[in-house]
Length: 83
Image (cartoon, rainbow, N blue to C red; front, side):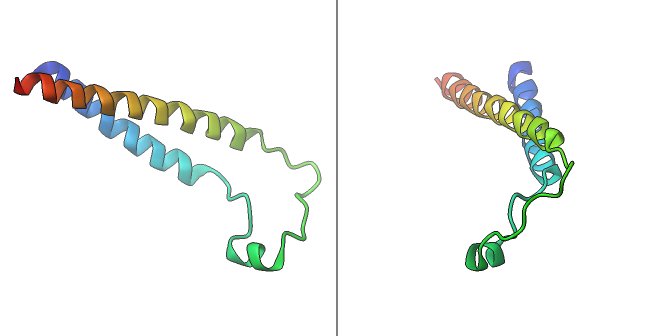
């Protein structure tokens, strides 16, 4: 294994862990199955900001793009190294 394969593998693992943690850190947007059946009756509390969730969503999107790019790069490297 080359150093590039090792580094890309480490980045891939770190990105996967980051996606999981960022997803778990976000607040749920609904009440789940009961909200789907009964309808969303409640509004958000007054004064409650969702700035943190917006930042977490942007970070999750960015990390998922990095994850996708690294997966494609690892796939290409594995095909190239086999030949």
